[in-house]
Length: 69
Image (cartoon, rainbow, N blue to C red; front, side, top):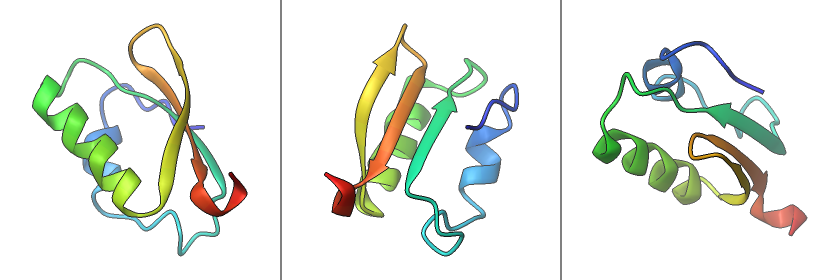
């Protein structure tokens, strides 16, 4: 779970969740980024093989490795 008050956009662009062995990942997207940045982040995670599997009010999103689905 990642909730770093807006730092998620920067951090997630510098690490590989797959290399860290992450299978399930939850993130809270804060409004420090634009809607375009949030959509790009979600698209990047999907491109890495993580599918959104749950969404809580607007900005709390859980992803799971596609191999688990």
